Image (tube, rainbow, N blue to C red; front, side, top):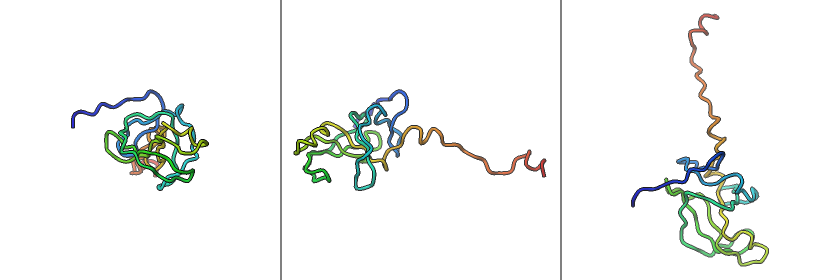
Length: 129
C-alpha cells in the first residue's frame, strides 16, 4: 500500500475521533445544521487526510444528490461524505463540499483540555488528617 503522508493543519482543527488525523479548520466550516444517520454533522468547504469512495446517487432530506463516502486516510473509518452534484438548483451550493459526522470527529479543543486527576491519597492528604 505504501506510506501514508498526512497534512498537519496549523491551529485549532477538527480531527478523526479514532486516530486524531487532521481533517478541517474552523474557518472552512460552512454549517452545523446537517444531519446523518449517526446524528449531527458539519458541512465544510475543504477537508484533508481523507480518501473518497465510489460515487452514488443518494436521496437525502434535501433531495437527490450524487455523493461519495469519505474515509480517514490513516485509520480507514468512514467519517462522512462529499457532495459531488446536487440535482436541485437550491442545493447547488453543496457541490464539492464535505460533510463530517460529529460522532466521528473531535474538535482539537475536545481532547487538548483532557486533564488527568489522580484521586489516590497523597502524602499531604495523610498529613492533614
